[in-house]
Image: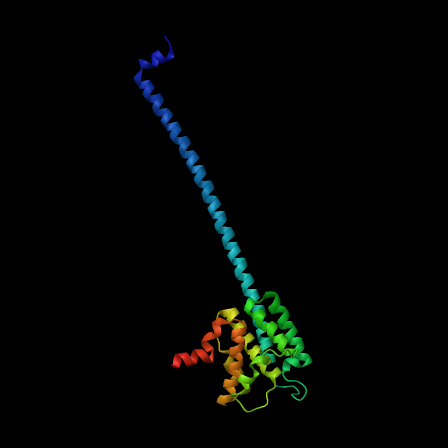
Length: 227
């Protein structure tokens, strides 16, 4: 009698074998599922660790960059407000040897690490410092608002420096400040015509440099809101 025939006569044994086989298969599938689950869990955990490390590195780099950017902003602001120079020889402090040195440091950092808008601002500021007449086509319309002789080099440098300061502040903290107010504080005057004159130049450079986030400070926007 073959083993299969013997098993037919012993259903309890067959049931036990089937049950044992089921237990073994269940254990095997359980082990495989557990193994696969553990592997996937380890991969997910490793991915999370890598993502957290990447975020920490990015945050650290941003903190270091912002720290350096604040130092650059402080130097730029110092040069912008510095009035201790021979105004008979130099239009602005940026045109003095010390001012040139400060500006070169600012430009090097901003060009290497700054936002695109800041890079454009600092390039235009450099052009103004080195006597490029950037507002020549606008002179007539600008001159209409005041009855004064204008040092256009001084005018353009101050307008662009104010914009660059405001832009760097925006780069660091997304804080929007009005560049026109920086000019008003620099000259400490309440002459409406003179403030409007400087403001128009800032408006023109906002358009030239496509600094749309400063549009809310433009005179044209104010007029529309009042109307």
